Image (cartoon, rainbow, N blue to C red):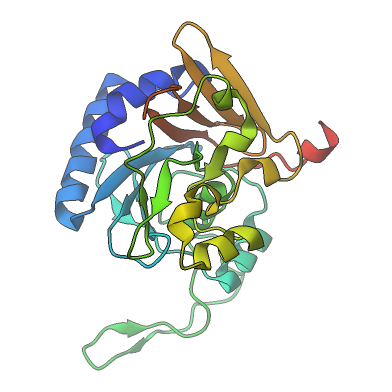
Length: 286
């Protein structure tokens, strides 16, 4: 949900429990406005709120124009001071280590919290100094909760980030951009899961082939992965709100994620509010 649409967008998803206090809303708008001015993003979106045991994290991502094919999402996090800092993507090696160390434990809410407990009776080796007096760390990087937060945000975003099919197209520079021809889904199409795709780089082979075609702009509806191909089948719940003339999609894989679309309009968005805990038993529940 983009910064300019934050207030109305949060009202759209309030039925799912995704709400902010007045203090949070004002602090978030100020923090995101400052971030957009500093980073010069073409688009800046509020991604969601991840709950911790002692404090919560507010997540945002920005997109700049000019990237080939799918634009890169640059993620940021903030705590109660709403000063956003960059979230560096976790490497494959770090992801394995984080998973082994933490499992599905909830986040604490303190970015500097170490993930690796100190070994009893073992002193930390003295750090060497570089040419300019900076300390040089030997061995693997010491992981903190920020590294785990980055890993979880990447994982949740990959499995969610739902948008209406046709809302994005590919231009003459072979870059995925918002479609000017998109006027919204019809009321009947908006209730069908096949009408929605993931707003991220595709991994489905058929989508990758379509994206690589020279005439790919003519097949813009098939360049992003569809939600109907997500596993397990039934991991998405589509609901219609007759009062607000709104359709919502809720992820059963990541409880707390909700996307919305107002049929026959260009109004759509999504947000995550939760503990960043995946429902791993979902295949046995549906």
